[in-house]
Image (cartoon, rainbow, N blue to C red):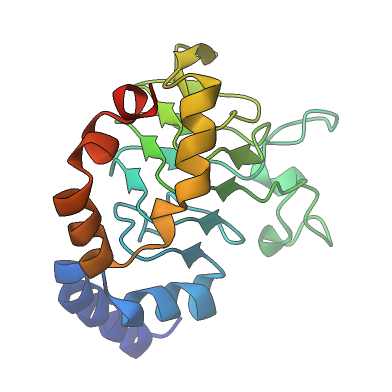
Length: 198
């Protein structure tokens, strides 16, 4: 990336991050430049240093600016785990010797401060919550709350009947106007879906 490209990127990011919830320009830029797909209304994920290429992030996701997603580990079978042994940009090895993992984060996920998603995790299910400081080492079921290092499922957010009802609603496909209408017409479902399902 040239100096001019870096300046352009900084200006774009400064301008478009003011409305990162809805900026289509920011989403197009990250998709074309960094191969990171970010759904509408998601925020905290416009950072190529914390979100690796190939990541797919759904709509309405909340990702803390201190959370990090890792797509590869240092290979451990060579003499050393130093980048000289796996990164071809240093001129020692001819090809990248890491194994990359593509992460899919489904809609409505919250990843809290200082959480780390390791290459062992390929998918975080819709509506999941990753607690602060959690280290996620495997796939996360939908609507699960995880905490700890390594992270474990503390509980599901809702009963299976409520999850089924939420899934049937497909609320994450709504735009801001339709979501506002849902809040006005069905506040019981929006703010207490477990009670509404009962």
